[in-house]
Length: 445
Image 1: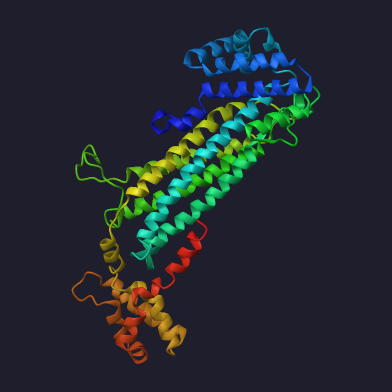
Image 2 (image 1 turned 120 degrees about the vertical axis):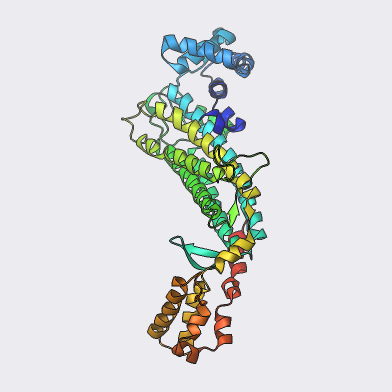
């Protein structure tokens, strides 16, 4: 991911320096387990740990380049790393990687990176959930118009809108927790995963100390259905971010103006039009969501490897692992900041709610008429006729409100008097169960 959309803590997880440090930790733990089992000398495991730890900790850009230089000759990244480590450890380094295959190191290392990335993403989700809950509570009873097909439907509250997004991201958190558990697996099983050259107890030892589970059947590589599920979970989170961003984009449109992104002092909206206040954050989030989702198909295609392993997945994961996690990390942080500072205009929400002369209360009038004795067919026809008469004359000198057009119909006037009609159209009737919904959403939060 380009630096513009990269946060340091997530980037550090995917850096080559950290990847090599994780590789060493896997090798050192495997050596310790082998020493306990008598497979290698205990002194060798001690030297590997004592000399290798500071060497791995010292890895920086120059050391990465040195390892890369070796790889340009060996054409093998793990061998290049082991060669470089041996230069600092000495003869005892020959006991590193005993019975292991490259995938044991690479796949277990990737599992460590992905679980660490998942932990950061879960923390990001917690921050976004907190922001959504605070803003939802703030606007629990703020009336606004609900829209279906982009058209005014019935009144709702802005708090209910945000509560819906909170519930969605809470589900996403659960999905990500599950995906983290699924990807947190270790494979130290040797060529084709038979443990012919490494004791399964070595795998158990390494897994426990890395906070991972053992892979039941690794076939030399950890099965990629686990990885596919992980990237799919990231994609669903990204889609939820886009849904939230799309809502903000629509509400900020000039003809709507119900909410808008915070506009900083000194911020410029356009190089040509000084008046512009564009929804740049939510538009950026929409684009980032597309990028994160784009990694799902390659992850799914990685599942079908040849026989016990091939490396067709390797180049894919070198790109999608860091890019998907870094992109989603940035997007979640940006979405949180956007919601924390979102500027809300309740007065404008009220104006828009009333802009169609009251027709948004058509269902409640329909119900009142049927309950008062008028047939559903006659009630629907009368209400629709009044609504269309209101809608088509909006803003014109002879315009009448929805209530006025209703009462002009003899069948309606004979069924409901003006006070009864006003009671049916009272917006507060729409909000009687707001607290019930909030209790459902936030009871376990």
